[in-house]
Image 1: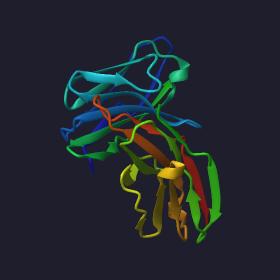
Image 2: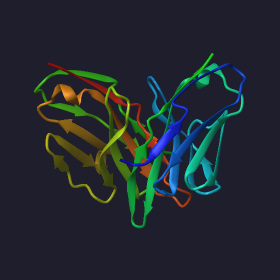
Image 3: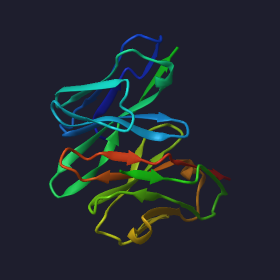
Image 4: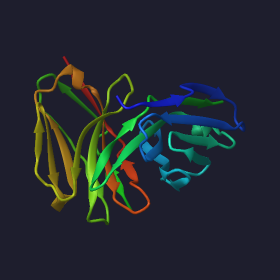
Length: 115
Length: 116
């Protein structure tokens, strides 16, 4: 199994508070991703990273920011949480191999509830 | 822009029936990859298959098979002789190969119920 963990696994917070979710990998993979999963929408890409300090926006990036200061950690921050950000958040990693595009490995998910 | 459409929201079958999950994609790129993932009730996401845009060969793995047709921009997934353990949400995904990274978009998923 890919060495990928997410913390916290569950969090309940109040509207307006900042929240940071952490994704940690031990695989030294170059690419990392944050998705949110909501009923009827499947997995939607929030942000992704293609190297240390290299990030880009996904489909639903508004209200979220990310940082990657070292290969193993990819942080997702909700600056001021809203109820619409209640969701399950998945982190994924992907190995960079020249010539082919590998599959993603996913973390266990973080269930975030914003009251 | 990328788009993945899984028009079937939920499918219910009886065990041993064959079932096909549809996936239609949109992309402007000539080089791209398609994936299928499974999410069982336990919640983890499991990789099933990868296919690149230059390989239209169909693939069979046990009871699973995949049909990739560029002409119709489809990458359909068939389970033969379904089993209760196949009950899960199945996601189709599209990755474009771009200089900044491999942005990957998922479809909304198809929830498959297999009844005994």
